[in-house]
Length: 159
Ligand SMILES: Cc1cc2nc3c(=O)[nH]c(=O)nc-3n(C[C@H](O)[C@H](O)[C@H](O)COP(=O)(O)OP(=O)(O)OC[C@H]3O[C@@H](n4cnc5c(N)ncnc54)[C@H](O)[C@@H]3O)c2cc1C
Figure (cartoon, rainbow, N blue to C red):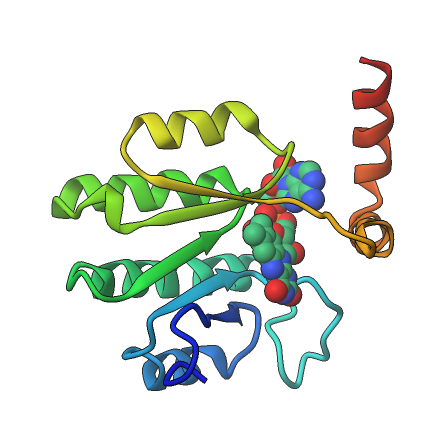
């Protein structure tokens, strides 16, 4: 598809065992969005424990960011996990990597202050918003994935 459409990209889920192998085969692709993974998967294909998912996420994110130092690959680090964001920032400073080679991605409305700070520090920041006729089912799916969000939305409405 990339041969035909220059703006094509892939999303890889760090909770899948296969993702490290997929990533190794995709190093020459233009860009990849890395997420933890949102759906219920069986332990035969995905890490069941959050600790292992987080560790795999950080490992793959750092590999992608290192690859991006060639100026060709575009990593999309899609997470709201500030422990992971801090660990990435520490490695970027230590290795003197270019912050502008990294694009963090978060949902609209989640941690606005953190998003602003990242842009001030020289990182790219992309915000995902839902729009168009399918915004409502999309939004309901997000709420169903994380019931704590219902409370978050109610609080925001009253505020
Ligand atoms: C830009 C973007 C694109 C995505 N695309 C895909 C996709 O194509 N396929 C897929 O499977 N998944 C996708 N996801 C979802 C992803 O897989 C995770 O389920 C989701 O990002 C939550 O994981 P986390 O990395 O934020 O870490 P978590 O460990 O789940 O969360 C860390 C902390 O962030 C905060 N937080 C996280 N999510 C929310 C939220 N929704 N509302 C409020 N606070 C929150 C909480 O404080 C939480 O403690 C996408 C996520 C983003 C940001």
